[in-house]
Image 1 (cartoon, one colour):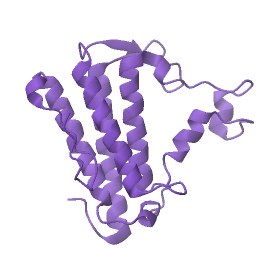
Image 2 (tube, helix red, strand yellow):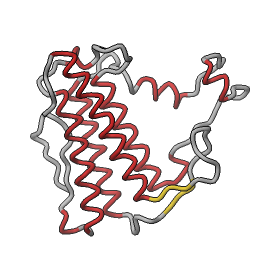
Image 3 (cartoon, one colour):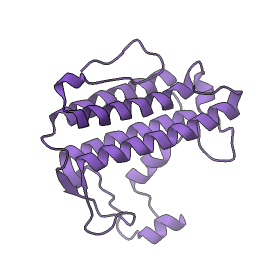
Image 4 (cartoon, helix red, strand yellow):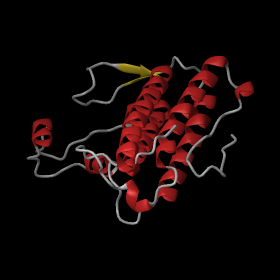
Length: 201
C-alpha cells in the first residue's frame, strides 16, 4: 500500500481505491483527510513545542497525535482480534470507583499508558511520533482491505463506558476512528493557534 514517506507532516497513506469497493475507499479517504488535518497542526514545530500546553487544558500537540495513533491502533486491532484486543482488567482489590476517584492502591498498566499518550515523554520527538502514526495508518489500511465484510461484528470488551452486550461492526469502528481523529484535529488546531498564531489550514 503506497505511503508517502517524503511527507514531513505525517501519515497520508492512501490505499489504491481501484482494489477496494467504494465504501471502503470512501471510509479510508475520510480517515486520511482527518489524519492530515491533525498532523498539519505540527508542521514547522520543534520537539519542545509539541509538549507545551498553551491553554487551560492538559492537552499538548504531541500528546494528541500519540493518543489518536493509539486509539486507531487499538480499534483496528479490535477489528482483527475482537474484545481480547481491548482489555480493561483491574488489579485485585481495585474497583472502577477507586480508579475514578484516584484512590486505587494500584493503577493498571493500560490506564498508565492511556495517560502517557497525552503527553510528550523524555526522548520522544516529532519525527518518532509521526513515523509511528505512519505505521499505524498503513496497518489500518491493510486490515480494512483484508477484512471480508464491513458488517462483521465483535462484542465490546467489558468496561463501565460500554453498554453491556454491545457489539461493533468494522464499519462502525471506522466511523468512530474518523470521528475521534477529526475531533482531536479540531483540538489541535486550537492549541496550535494559541501556541504561535498559526492555523493548520
